[in-house]
Image (cartoon, rainbow, N blue to C red; front, side, top):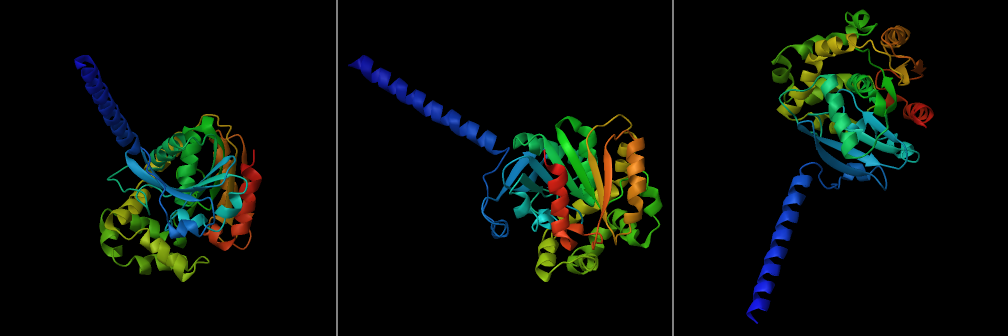
Length: 323
């Protein structure tokens, strides 16, 4: 009788220890990826889309995911977040696994003190694709997101099916120097001044961002969403740091001369100041070792090509991202 009681006690202790270990493992793994959260904004996309977060590269990235099939990663520009792609995500989800990401520090992603150069943010996206088991990927980047998309192509060609870079010149690549004196680039120098834009724009995001929204087809609701994505001092600092990282991006890009077989498609709005630079950018990329570069213009669009011509952009992605 005594032996049986001892055995029972040991068994109970083993069960308790096992539960403790499982709980501990759960807490460790839970640090890498959080459970999907309900969001009315995400729900408006239709069934099958979820909002999630993942711990990667020293930050927490927020993403919205839906659909099935080959993976397409969507990277937004300024002053936007994942919601930039809301009009095309349901259509793309019929053919692809679509993942729209908030760049570090923006919207639902965690701000950090540093790490806002394109090469490091490409590492953010790479670690996210590994956690979500999404490789190989096709990367679409607009504006700042286009700089990250190109860095991704350069750092991780082995897991990249292709990339689409929308309406942005690339630091360190032909065409970048040509546009620096253009009136449309006035904000770049302002946003690169250390500390000053944080002080001047804080509390005035709607006024400052509203200037840029005048160049695209934004509703008042759209504008309000994007203003909220940059509402905190940390979020403002994050995006200004992305602009301050342009010299680092130029140095990284200028150093890339090895052969790269990843198919690239460059496009700009036909009303964009960057439209005339597209052929020169393509020439610079080819000279840097990119073997497959195609170009195009998006009719009826200026800089915010997804807002201006969502169906045209979705059609381009379907054409180039299909396996």
